[in-house]
View 1 (cartoon, helix red, strand yellow):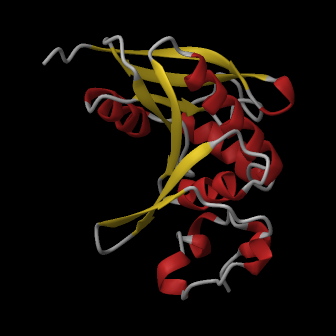
View 2 (cartoon, helix red, strand yellow):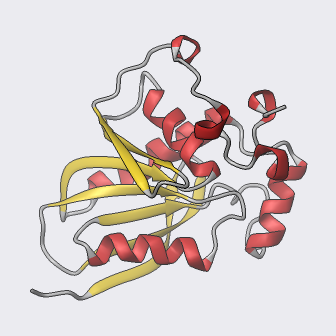
Length: 192
């Protein structure tokens, strides 16, 4: 098995056609390969989350992590960028969905792509992955993987079609609480 990978910072088109920074990790094989949009956690676009993208590449996927804080604090350290985003109330949901759509389009445009793209998020990124998958006009996101912390179990939902997230049953706080009392990113969904 040929296991060489390439990881690099790239520029992609995000929400509204804005150019944003992203981290691309991919196998050095011809494909065809599936893609994964990796959504970083609240502490941000940092080395541990870049390692997650590299791990997906080592497993045979093209992985792309958009820097969701690029507009809030370009070229800032992960801690400073996260603080700037928090000070502005977090990443707006509509912008997040546009950035994930741009990341998915970038992955599909790679010559090694098979056209299939999933999205995964960690910690606060889990909520954001669900939002991206629920967007009715999303560009063919094929699945969402949501973590349920404490059990080490991951649930994959294929071809999720939810047109109005208000109709979705809200699970118990023990399932859906992503540290809201600590990081304050949830806005209107803030746990009380």
